[in-house]
Amino acid sequence: MAVSAIVTVQDIQAYYLDNPVAPSNVEAMFPIEQSRTKTWKTISNGSTYVNEAADPMSLNSKVPVSGRPGFGTVMGDMTTFGKAREMTADDLEEFAELKRQFGETKNPAVAQRLIDFYGNDLKFIRDAMRAEMAYLGNALLSNACNIGFLVANSPYMQGITAMDYGVATWQKNAVSASWATASTDILADIASVIATAKAQGKILRKIKINKTWFEYVRMNTVIQKYCATMVQNLYSTQAPPTLVAVNSMIAGYFNSDIAFEVIDETITRASLNDIKTVANPFADGVAVFTMETRVGHFSWNPIYIDSPQLETYESFFVVGSTKQVNPSFSEIYAKGRAFPVVDTYADNFYLKINAVAW
Image (cartoon, rainbow, N blue to C red):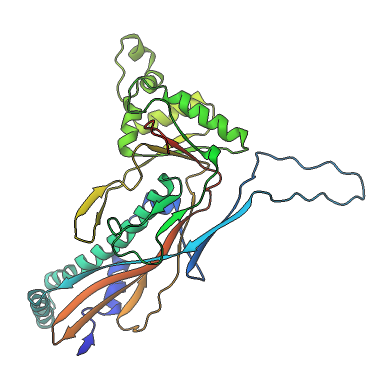
């Protein structure tokens, strides 16, 4: 059985170079970082109090040293995941014909058809790997750093069955009235979270929420009242405000640099029997309060490349192609070993805004 590449490593590299991927919100929250091992690790100081002052000391005395009582490490195994697209005998025949035509004519139109033929598969697997990255990061964060992997939702995941950071009791709560109810005092709920965090020495500036539940924020009568102009309030003509308007209002209301960050993602995941579920990976009914946009990093470890003529790296994953004879078979595939790490797990606040307890 002979094995070769359907497209060369140079073809793969050239396509990705000419078609760079658009940045996503998950990379802002979890920048990609390479790990030297097959495990991931987070180190956080859970006692980072606001502006803790220096200690007074006398002349010629030893400088007082503070301990790190909140110093903690959470670590675990990375998971391996991948995606592939196969070419049928008809596809291979069409691919060979396009190569023959281009070899004879050097026609730019034929060349573009040839690039598009395998480029669509290269785009598909890259999108699939990045979608899994977005799913893992957003799902982990919005479930208060607790995520499970079952055959039903992750049939091909390997290396880990569940992850629970064990966040502190004070970091998790639920509102008394759902934000889906237009009359709920959302500003009071936000104020309560800020006060709770401040008592723990934490500063919270960003409120991460998915798009569905931010629409409830826009429809909220209290939010609309504070976002509306004097004339709109006078004539009761308030309208759903934009994200910019809401953020401008709450920054002024709290006299603080605080803002909503809306997660607007749609990801399709398949079960073992290929039942597809389409959803936003950031959980419904949850708002996560963080200090900054970035909450951690996406840790990855290289997978050994046995055949450099068949495989190459693109971002955090390996891309390759194979073509076998007798029986005829070919595919373009990607595989990676990685996992998101929430470095700020001990500083965030996880609020159930659907009035359902954690």
